[in-house]
Amino acid sequence: MNKWVAHIALFPCVLFLHSCKDMPAKNHGPIILGDSSVIVTESDPQRLQDLVTDLKPDIPSSENNDTVEKKALAATVSNSDSNKRTKIITPPPNPLKLSGNGLLAEFKDVSVLITNVNAKLSGNPNLQHANGAVYTLISGNINGNQVKLTGNVTKVSQRYQTVVLFKNSLGTLQLDAFTTTTDWEPLKGGNNQYHISGLDMQSLDYPDANPVAIRNAIQRAGRRRRMSRRTIEEMESSVHHVRSLNQKPLTVTLRSVMWKIDGKDAQGKNFSKQIRVDIPI
Image (cartoon, rainbow, N blue to C red; front, side, top):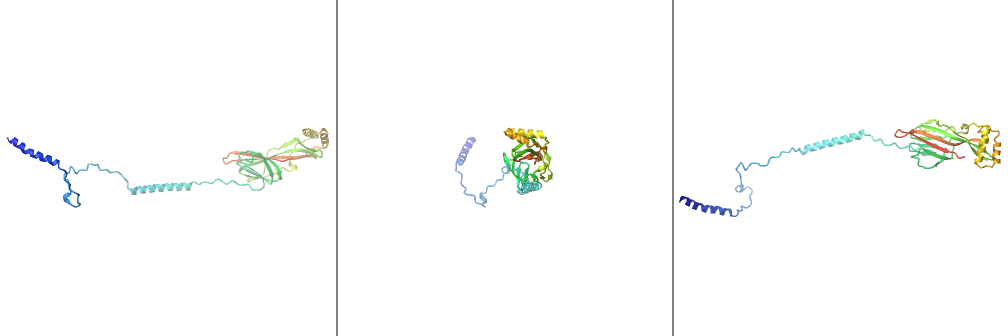
């Protein structure tokens, strides 16, 4: 009986609690600053614990970073300035220009000026990759002039070639049998200036020849020129008294002059250039 009465008494309580869950939430309105009645406080220490682990990153201050960066930049600038001071840039030397009138040959490693000589170059006028050049004399006297140079020149040598001419009223013949080419001889000079000498008529070399050799040379040269037999015989007769190649009607004549220029280029390698001037007869 008592149990039944207790069940009847609990039934209204269950209905009341169920109805409370279905009631809409009450709007308490906006929170008013300073109103202690609307502030919810928690007193349970378990609910007040911080569940997020504190992060303690090692972040240097901006002041320290700026100081380190400024020191590094200052060291870089200092090293750059030091390198600029210690590294000396030497500009390439300006090539010297030869002055004066004359034959000018400009090779890659050396330029050559033969003063007071007018000559015409044969072949390609660009001598930068050439080892030699050939000219034909137009005017001027080679003997007694100078060879001027630029570059690292160690030696200048000269040689020449002579021919013997027969010349009188009967005609002119070049006696090739007596053509002479001398050996290379060093020119005197220094500081890239050398004096040309030994080319005057009295100094020219020529071979020895007897009267028979002279007549035979005239005969061969006349036939090569297709002269008549009578003319050749008269030429031979005109030299019956000649005992030397420098006696009239014979003349020792300068045919060409050659110069060899030896030196070292910018890399220290040896070079050798040659110039030849042919003299028209």
